[in-house]
Length: 261
Length: 281
Image (cartoon, rainbow over all chains, first blue to last red; front, side, top):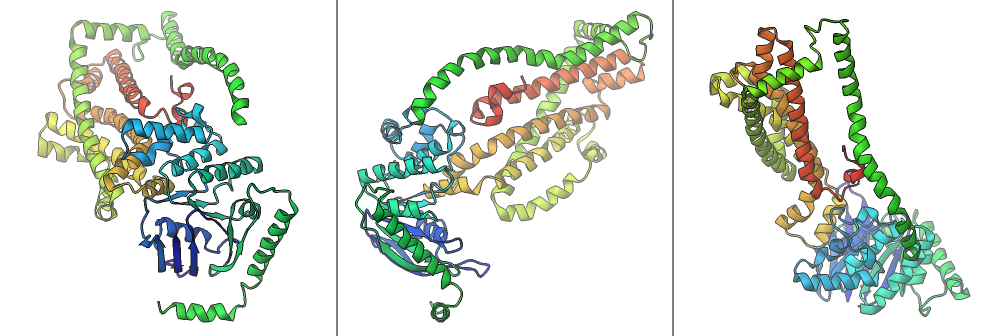
């Protein structure tokens, strides 16, 4: 269980990026965090990943506080961030340096096969297309078998076709070990395809606006009526979240008391 | 889906580029040699035709025969060896100091605050200005010459290493952090490989300066070395000897630079810029 308890982040320049964010995420759940720019989505993810410390509140995984990068927590960024001086296979094995060489080789080979890139094992990252590179990044994050996988707009730099392909692919990979996925996105379509639960965020300061459970069965048909209805519901929630951004006396009052802790 | 499309296309293309690459391998150096060889041939012909007596600008054949003479008497090897020795020692010292201090300043902010302003101030001094001081401190023999070369080599290496470390992509460092690399592992697995391309460039710049400063060092009173050949040629009015020394400087400079490039190549194959078709040769 991943628990966020009144997590807040104030940057040194005084910007309140995230305020009083609380959520409980079960193991194996897929949660999409959606919202306009400046709503603290990435801040939230970086705090869970332990890359930035939260200013307030607590983040725990199975009761253990997450304040620095944790072996059970993996992250995939918007860009593949492959190490250009390592071959594709060595990139995937980057987090496996504790294993013996043959064991590492087996795990990497299996991961390469799963993302369909066995023939690219010896290629340099520069020789890959954007979609291929992002698949390597997914393999690199999953090969260490994390309990929680964080995804920061992982497909937003790809073309629509590749994006859909990778979304389906991600679900396939997820179904094998069923880690918890926390996916930050600004693509409503993507959120509805992937998530069990969608958290709609509200900007300035970043707060949780509404949580929506998605009970559509998988695999989800992007063209079904129900899919469209669900999408519309999320879009409406997003619209309302922006409407209330300006005048919100309740938030102002709570922001005042947030200074106390 | 991409793979099924990729495979046949690649196998068709793979035949043509190979022979084209082989062709380029031989034509490229030939193209580079075209200009100097044409100029040399034209000058040779102009002197042979009697349009110039070639006394102040001797034709290539005279320069060649001067080099031959120097080589036969064994003098050339002696001068080359001593100059190479000076450059080698100065380069090694400059690289060692520049690498260590540059790495410290790049990695550790407090050290940068303490050290960098002083180094930058020293860098602003033309290195030749140190010559009188070095001679007073270290004497007129080898030590002062090596010191001058080392000073010339130091600055580009220091700047290159520090700048390279400072400009390592934060995003790549974050990858290391998410895999919880320790400090030494972060240096070995992320920083060193990331810094290497810029380091090789600064080594080449440093070596170029080393060759520049060895001439300055040998001007300030040497009895052997290629720089001595230059001065000797001027004082005795032997322009062919000056040109011979210049040609040998060019050959040695280019060869040592090329050696660095060759030595670094296996470590930099991952770079786009070091793809074989784009190399200097």
